[in-house]
Structures are given as C-alpha cells and as structure tokens.
Image (cartoon, rainbow, N blue to C red; front, side, top):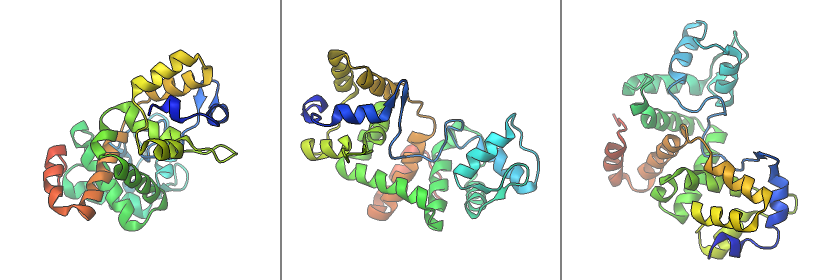
Length: 245
C-alpha cells in the first residue's frame, strides 16, 4: 500500500502542524550532530584543544562549543568549557583505535566509538536514538534504511505527533507492516496533489544533508549486532572498515 492510500484522515492537519513555510519540523533523531556540525572529524582537534586548555582552531568558537555541548561532550561556555566524561572517554577511545584524525575514511569508526562510549556511560539522548534505530531495524534490515538519503531521513520526519496525537509513522507501520514508501512514491504523490505543505515536506527530505548520519547509524548498528549477533560482528566491521581492537 502506497503512503497516499494509507495516510488519509489526519495527515493534512499533521502537515499543517509540522510545515511552516519552507521549514519542516524534525521528529525523532538518529544522530547527535547539529546543523552546523555534520561529522565527527571536526571534533577531533576541538576535543584535543579543549583537553589541553588551548583556543579552538575555528572561526566561531562559541558555536563550536555550543555544538559540542549539545552532544554532551563538553560543559560550560567558551572559553571556560571543559570535557565531560563522554568527551574524555570518546577522545581516549579514538586514540586507542588510531582514528583521532580528520580522515573521512575513519568516520564510521569514530561514530561507532562515540556511540559505544555514550552507551557505556548511559547518556540518555544517545540511548533514545539507539532505541529508535532498533525499532527501525526490527521493521526492515539496516541496509534498507542505509540505502539512500531519503530512506535514512523519512522515519525521523514521520515519527512525530501533532496536538491531536496523529502520527503518520505509526499509521504507516500499522497499515503496511513497515513500508514507508520510496522517494518516488512520495514525489509522485506531492506532484499529483499540488499541496504546498506536502511538497515542502518531500523537498526537505530529498535535500537533507546526510553528513555523519549514515556513519552514526552504522555505528549504532555495529553496537546492536554485537549484542544480538556477535558472530556476525567481525565481518560487518571489516565490511565497513571499523577498527575493533
């Protein structure tokens, strides 16, 4: 069943609630990065400089600290900010694995280590993201969600409720058994309806910048496999290039 056939009563009102002009509210998160920090590579020098009490090598130092604080990696305001337990543990783990660099090739490994330390320390926001990821992988394999940008972002935007309690993610799961629809399904629907809110919704997901989201989800997936299918973990880590010392 296509989304247009499953999402009937309530969906138009839901769109009015989450779409405000060109801005579309995000629902549940699958990554810790903010809009001005899209990957872990930039964190490597910042965390090291914070540890040493040095000035950050970035133009907007206040924003950089705000980004790290939002990720629970530092406490306080610039220039008196300091590493949290998560910040210290993550930097130590990156060094242990030899991924304390700014290489894109090590992005998955850094994200996996970041999530692993957050889980070990019980950081609630990270555990919430992991809970959502586990929900998704119980519906479809991880590869389904990692396949493209649209599949990776669609669940986050759908899984939020309007004041009436309407939640299209839950409606689709119940009606289709987990098929949220392809990018083409949603684009065809938007073009046929000529609804500005629906068009803005689809356009926002199509233009999402994946940044570190895919890598962070892969890191959470590695953690999940380690707890559910440990024998499969070495092969998956090797496939993704994640050091696992």
